[in-house]
Image (tube, rainbow, N blue to C red; front, side):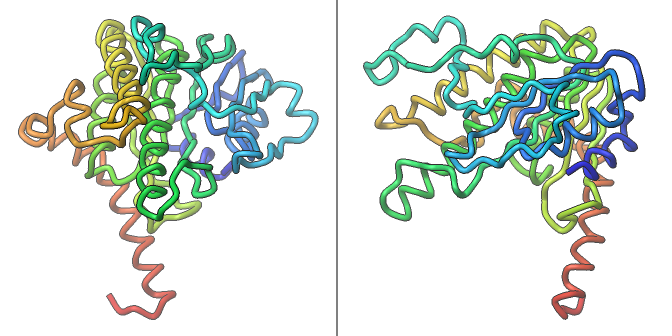
Length: 292
């Protein structure tokens, strides 16, 4: 993953060569992104948070010298209470939510916040039947995505940078989240690295100047995400949580408004992502002996 962040850095100037620089790496292990930052900038220091190995997470692979500048937290972010402040004290499903507050390290303000956590097939869920397991995984996947955004908007410095991994820019929820990032930042670049998985739908959004002149809007978006996270964790018919539906991000932008007023901007941002994916798909089909 060092190579991936290297590509993103070339595309959008993410990490300075020198000067004090702080970062938060969500979904840190095995540590490729943090390694890249710490090697490039000798004055950089950061915090990494990652799923415990006991829950299917990866071991941290930073060497001892780099570890001196990285504070590593091995924790499942879904154990934190990311609900709106007014709901944190409310019972969920008749039971007080036992979630922990965010650690102090995750509420500081960082120059760079990187969101690279993704839903793991090995994550333990409550499903028994294949259908129940699939639904439980969808709930986990969506809560993880929204939870990362909540932590990011809580911890990025005004004017800082967000690097976010998303999938399928043309679909929900990526299109809505890209629009949100575009509205709260001074510049936004979408980039699909050629280092790995070029034929897949994943890409990275790099938002710079986050919160500059958009602090009020950013606060509104954060509150909306917190309310959504609470619903994803405790909503549904049995109050055991649910997965996202296409209207959940209407507080950011409705699908109708996105198509009627912002489609040209979305296409402009996405062209390079699609171009790289086309190249990757051609190479993939060629290796499989499929004529295109």
